[in-house]
Amino acid sequence: MSKLLQGNFSHVINGKSYDAKGAKTLDVIDPATEKPIAQVPIATRQVLDEAVDHAQKAFNTWSRTSWAERAKLVKAVGKEYKDLSDDIAHLLVKEQGKSMPFAQGEVNLVHEWFDRMPDMEIKEQVVYETDKARAIEQYVPLGVSAGIVPWNFPVLLMCWKIIPAILTGNTIIIKPSPFTPLCDVRIVELFNKHLPPGVVQIVLGDDSLGPWITEHPKIRKISFTGSTATGKLVAKSCSATLKRFTLELGGNDACVVLPDVNIEKAAPNVLLSAMFNTGQVCHAAKRIFIHEDIYDKFSKALADVAKQSGVGPGDKEGVMYGPLNNKMQFEKVSEFFAQSQSEGHNFLTGGQITKGTGYFAPLTLVDQPPENSRLVQEEPFGPIVPLLKWKDDEDVLKRVNDSSWGLGATIWGSDLERVEKLARGVEAGVVWTNQAMEQHPEVPFGGFKSSGIGAENGVAGMKGWCQVRSIYLQKSKV
Image 1 (cartoon, helix red, strand yellow):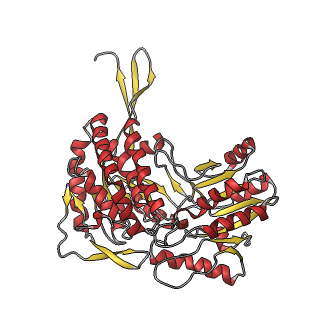
Image 2 (cartoon, one colour):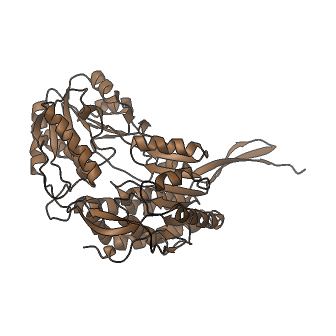
Image 3 (cartoon, helix red, strand yellow):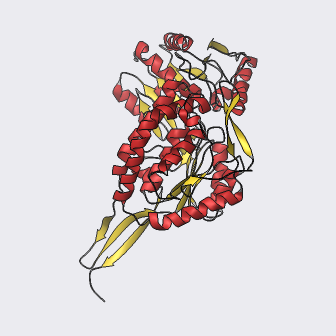
């Protein structure tokens, strides 16, 4: 068990753990056992207001520091974060449920953001010049910002928000999911060992806290990761105060398998792209289109790999796929299983959720369900995936794009020219070819259509934490 589970968990405000004595609390549940492992306080409006006031005060100083100063402090946090990585991964398994290999992968991926994002300074530049004047384009911080973090990747996605926010001179308040607040609290405590008070804070709460944040008049930017339905509410709330927002929302990502693919090599990777984190990934493959020439062989290969994959408690040796994170998500995914059964779909593997302790569901591949079925049209966010046949490139591209979402997609094949042509035709924010889910600080990540607005990461994501200012400088004196 992680040593980070020891001690209290509370808000971190103005550089220290907040005294929440007497506050209402909520339980944090281990999804493998359905038993509470910790309690956290539920914030009131007053607690949020305190955090915002401290963030504003800190901004007045932090925004005037140089990029080099801020980068140095971020790298110092990153160095200590590396030393704590193993303990963070163990705590992540307990609160999120994912297997240890996936937990370690998430925690260790953050190292890249600590190491490389400090070197991604957006420098001012002269964009227009004559003999009489020059014009400078600058990107300056917005002010107090907030990051609303989901429960599927609480460590990675929180750091995606904190690191660029503070590097660009903003202060930030984190609202973690009530299902997975523990790692986030410990990491924010770590930031506060190196940064001035009020620069990075965390406020814990229930479903009331999100709307209080998005409507708060002193918060100038929201970075939200979550469902499309909630994202629309965030956008509507932000519009009342004209605050900036970035939305990274849901997806119904397609995976296209070409007929010339190496089945033995590709099948395990395609399955992983669909079932990673037990399917609880916004850009997981949720519709797998397999060319008709290899459909039978490839679908059998997928089923064989799925049957060999260990499902169980995330801290158990040999387990690759843990439970679903929470009861609400378990019940939603169970509906997809039940509906597929009632509609007579053919299961190549899985298909039946066994009652017992823990929010477990088997890896399930559904053989050619109708294209208008709920399983194909919606996002289960769990380990149940439809397999679909295709024949013609133009037709499959049309089917791939026939969705209100457009977050990501994957294309697998040996004819790289054909693969690239298909990739360029997909209406999605990120398209991977012959790989899946790779992420880097320099590469923007965002969605088309109902999958989001704006981007995380890259120069595009970094600029989302800034406002642009143009300065015209005359060369002559008055």
